[in-house]
Image 1: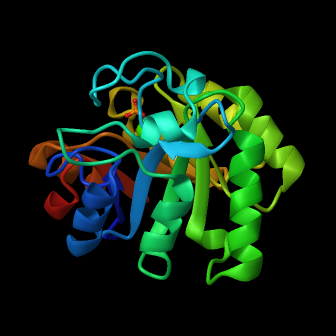
Image 2: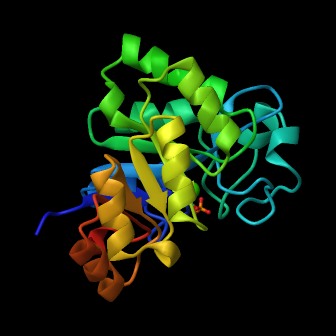
Length: 228
Ligand code: G3P
Ligand code: CA
C-alpha cells in the first residue's frame, strides 16, 4: 500500500500551540513531508500565520487580525510565551526540510503570498513542487492562478467533491483537499483519475488514518503527524 504524504496540521497542533514556529519545529522533528498553516494579511500588509480571523481564541489580544499592525500583532503572546510568526519566518525555518501547504485563510492574501513564493523560488532554495497554496476562497485561488499558473493549488472543500473538482479544473489545481466528512473511496478514485492528488484533513484517529490509507489518498493532514 502506498504511504501518503505526512502533513502536519498548523504545525503539530496536537503537540504544541498551533501555527507557531515551535509547533512547526515539532512537526519537523516528527518527520513530516509537509506542513499546513493558515495566513492572514495584517493592516500594514505583512502576511502572518494564524488560523482565526480574530485574535481572541489563540492570543492574549482581541479583535480582528486584519485590523492590527504588525507591531501590534508581534507584541501579543500565544499561551503566554509564543509569538504570531510571519509567513517568511516559517519558510526560513523549514527551507529544505519539507514542503509547505499555505492556506489562504484571510482576504487579500493571494498577491502577497505569491510575491513571497516567487521571491523564495528565485532567491532561495525552494522550487514550485515545495509549495501548495490552498483556500476555501475561490477568488483567492483565481488570483493565485492569474499571478502565476505554475504555483500548485489545492482546492479546499468541506461540502462537495464534484464542486471542488469543477473548480480544480478551472484553476488547473494540483490537488483536492477534502474534509474527512465528505470523502469516499469513489471520490478519491474519481479525483485521481482526473489528475488531482487528494490530501484529506483533519485526520487524528488511528482507525480513520487507516481508512484513508485504504482509500489510497495522497496526503493526510493531521494534528498528530507522528500517528501517520
Ligand atoms: O487545510 C486543511 C484545514 O486546515 C482546513 O480547515 O479550519 O483547520 O483551517 P481549518
Ligand atoms: Ca488550515
